[in-house]
Image 1 (tube, rainbow, N blue to C red):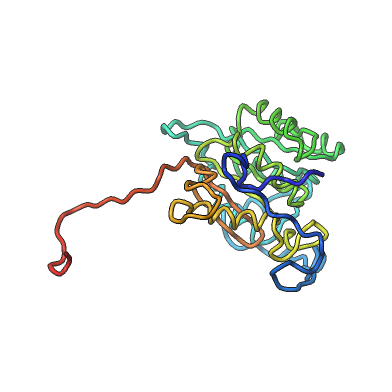
Image 2 (cartoon, rainbow, N blue to C red):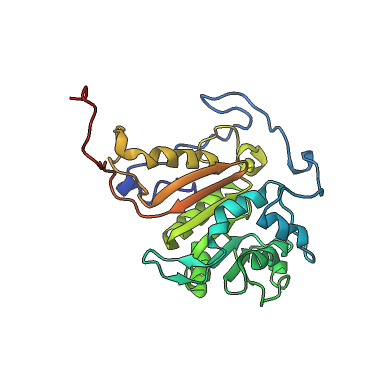
Length: 284
């Protein structure tokens, strides 16, 4: 597979930012600490006791039918990141319309049913998966499932075109950084202004089995850290880098345990403002 571009590198010639070479030495990060893969999925307990209170938790508790497998703290994140979209999507001019939601990764189909209960009957909900057996798992009145790879730009663009656009993306696909980056590079430009792009299970960025490692350049976690620097590009000058953000439409980068949320909103150059005129006497 070709080396993916950085989350920042929309165009290397335009942004003048290149992805740092990825180390292939597992367990040893250049200029970083030695580490081992501390755990795997089965190293963590399955706990089906009642979830923490919340709207998403209540819907998850009521869920029946097809299997939905999530980490226990995710419903709280869903309320924070997706809760504002439950009533629909509001465009920049204030117009309200039904939400368009895309989930990468269908698995057993349970999450698609959950999202229908969460976002309501008016939302457009699509799921994509590389496994052909997922095609018939979900009632098409609940969600539409399309079969293809998350690192296939033409496929993803065709799905978004069929949806009529996309407002919210949830990447719960392969959990491999190269695939996550490929999806992001394709879908971020198509995401509505005011939308959110969420990547789940980014703890795999630390696991060599998913091409990850602690502080390993090129993982989803490290690329998101780079976006934090890019968010503040106005305030420093780096040799060989542009003096403005490579992605001026990244409004915020939020980190949770195993989840990264990127909010899209066009930003202009920062400026200060004042209100009032009275100052302290000792201020010159």
